[in-house]
Structures are given as C-alpha cells and as structure tokens.
Image (cartoon, rainbow, N blue to C red):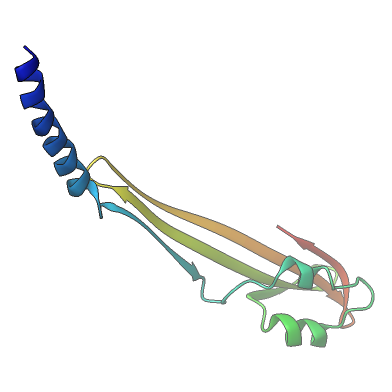
Length: 125
C-alpha cells in the first residue's frame, strides 16, 4: 500500500506543475481611457473658481474653451453648457475560467448662466 502512495506522488506533483505552467501568463488586465469630442473635462477645482457676479464670459472662454452648446432663456440670459464624457474600457481575464469586459461612462456637465457678460448662476451635473 505504501508503494502505491509513493508512486502516485510524482504523478500528482507533475499534474500540479502542468496546471501551474498552463495557467501562468493567462492573467491579464487592460484599461483604456478616452474622452468625448470635447476633450478631457475641466476639473471640479477649476469649476469652483467661478464666482457668481464676478466671473466674465471671456474668462470662461479662456479657461474652459468653446462651450458644447449655448442657449438663450426667455428672459434674455445666455446659458453656456460644457459637457464631457469619460469612457473607461477595461478587460480582465484569468483564462480559461474568467473573462470580464466592461465599459464605464462618466458624464460631467457644467452650466453657466450669464447676464451682461457676467456669470449670474452656475451649477454642475
């Protein structure tokens, strides 16, 4: 009986080594970050520099660039919108057992209402 056990041990060791070698190099992780056509979003810190009643349209254009869209309210105020989309595509695989793909989108929008060329209201979503 003891002879059978000792003969099986090298086979078990060889099988474990084969499994380990077969799985090595099969773990991978990859992520890509892309931005929408407007480019990377302006940081929240920059957004918080805007002061209602003080910040000018020229400053917004200089720091944020051209808005994604502009509109007029019924009472004549101008609303400038800056919309950003950040996509993260990720792939994690532990072949042949697990393969996960995912895409996350983060949308940020900054809105500035202007009267007489000065920010009268601002908010983000």
